[in-house]
Image (cartoon, rainbow, N blue to C red; front, side, top):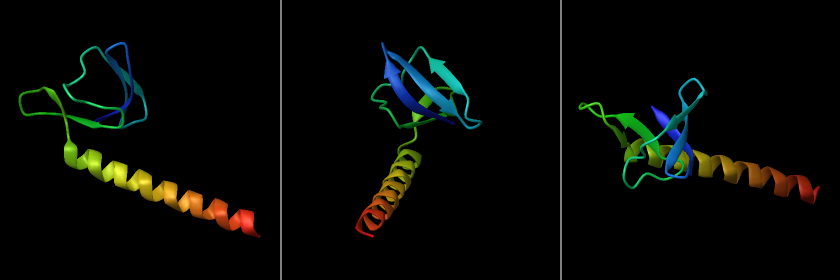
Length: 76
């Protein structure tokens, strides 16, 4: 599994499961920053839409929690 951190000049800079960086010369069609890439049975990298959706929901929930803490801290 790889997560696209950013896309620069047609190359995807990704993070692997161990936190290392991997640069891909080929970006799957339609892939965006933040997408989760997995290998298909044919050995091709594809976007896993379900894992991507789950990660985005988790990131949004974390952002809301952080914003809530900041608001409470600023009102005290």
